[in-house]
Length: 548
Figure: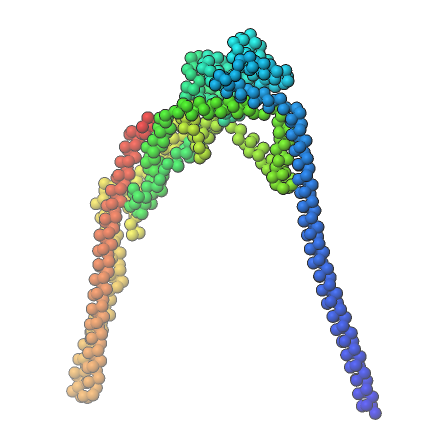
């Protein structure tokens, strides 16, 4: 009975345990299903979030694009309302200049139109300039002077430059220089524009005629002094810059002195100086080519006339705020409503504009070293005004490696080293090298040489003798000992032959090494002598990069 009860209890417990396992399994399955649903829900939420974010970005861009379109309309309407007459004045001034060249419009018509525009643009500096030009054409000196006076009051710098360029077109040389003087008086040597540099180039190449009073020369010299006075290290900066520029003409001397490169420990010091010496002619040729470039006066006059047209056609300073606003909204449209990229581009353009502010010396320097296309006359003018800086930089370039040029060299061949001053003591170097190589030869021969072959032949002879003695007593023993002796003698003889061959090979190796080593020492010394001659010839007669 007890056993039956126990069996019943065990069966009941197993049944309950099985039920618990089934419930647990079912719960686990439900939990797994729930987890899958949660994961699926999370993925759906992430996808929905992405779609929403993309929609938000698209909507933001769309709103920005619409806003930019509307703002462009507003800005342009405001420009039209406030400055439309300015545009008419610009177009009319350009038309008057063209009509004057062609003589196709009556003087009365020009005067009437210019006076009407003067009334409609009471603050614009170009309007009185237009009246002055019209009065000039009509030979009304009094009106021209009054109009010029008013234009100068409104904007002296632009008026002076405009009148200087107009006077050049009409070959009024003296008056042109008077206006240039006024314009130059307003220029800042520490922030020098490319346009002003173009006018200096035109002046230096006679486009404005002869400067009898040296007005422009005086200003240019004054600006150069101002730049030098405003920077305590400009000489060092320019010397470094032109030294680096000259370095672009240098090439290594490995083809010229291959043995020095291979066998001289000081080769890098030799190369550093001689490569600069070698480049002197190319540098001189470069600058002489710039200086001797013929000036295309017609092209330069055309360029100056384009500057005049650009000056007249340029927006007035009062339009700047609206023009910048217009440009920003154009960028927003260009980037499809991405205002962040539009702001980044605007800020980048402004930063680049500020970084392009250069002083006169920097502007001249950029003209020479820039990779961008530059009018040959501009380079010629820049070199003329930078001659002292360039010479100083060239001197730095040549001399900065001079003191490091070795007095003596160390020739290194096959692990042997010897020194020489001028390369003329080849016999001594060859003798030292020969001694070194022969010492190595003796050591290697000694290591290779062995008495074992002789020992073996001696042992073989002894065995053969013993065999002869034993033969008197025991014939078989005689035979065994005699054969062993003969074998040892033969082995020793073979090894002796191999030894002699090895010794001969060692001698041949060192003989060949001596021949090649001597040739290398001799050619290295010859090239060192030539290198010293190159240096001596240059130092006795240095290349002047502006006269060679």
